[in-house]
Image (tube, rainbow over the protein chains, first blue to last red):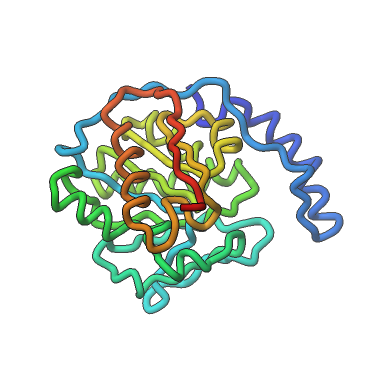
Length: 173
Length: 81
């Protein structure tokens, strides 16, 4: 089972289509973008969440301006790095570097994308055994799926292993 | 997010996700997912609507109890109250 079943063909169409157009014109044209597709979902064992450590993975572009650099939100080729946000971080101390969604909702109520207080409450009432110490945060504009697999996913994998999490909740923006 | 979920699941971490964009997310074949009719930038619910956000969260987390792959679950959650 592969993360991406048809990576080679996808990469070829990306190079001659979307990427070539960008290199030629400096413009991004998502009419030429081939969305990644798989045929089969992977198998995996379920867990008892009451006895598990859960890590939150967010693509909202959250970072802590006081201590961290923002994501490269304006980059047309994307940003494939991650930031770790301690789950105890006050929501008001988190900013969002992501140019591909309207920030009005997350500014009004950060829990629409980053539910730290909700998850803390679920940990407190026993629904979740334990929350991982950090949220794994990235900016979810990444047109190059090859770089997602070669750069982003290994970084996330290492962070999940460091958190010793048995389960992950992924919240896209 | 679907590809990240697949990668972690293949490495033994149980994953679940929720998305307002069922069309794109479904193509990646994630192990467990809920789909809503919420909006980009407000994946878990309307701003200020903690009850809706918790419903989406709890329904999505509940899938972790099941062995994957799980048929994606459509939640009756909308942008409008």
